[in-house]
Length: 105
Image (cartoon, rainbow, N blue to C red; front, side, top):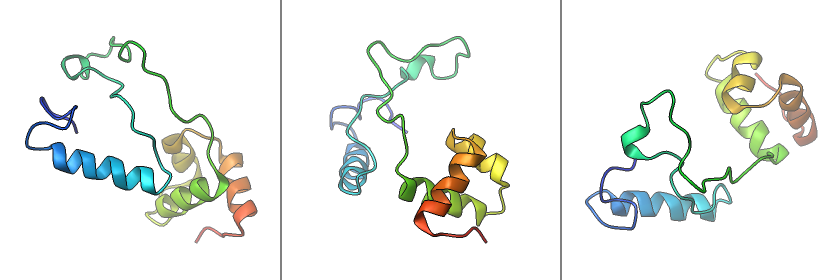
């Protein structure tokens, strides 16, 4: 979690955050993005995302979805719980597993 003073590479947590961003980008997971929520509003149920924030990813690659689904299924979540957690349908998980030739345990 970002704390005060960590956003622009300053503060004691900046190295960890920066390293995580570089690692994630190198894996093709995420592009560097601005935080979606302002720290002072994160716990407010009526809060809205920060001005100008946009979701960076609206679709999943089958391999990414299948991998994430298998990890959660391996932790004994149901397919429905996995779908809800990943923000997709159960059918999308099943199709991703089919496309990648992977089978849930």
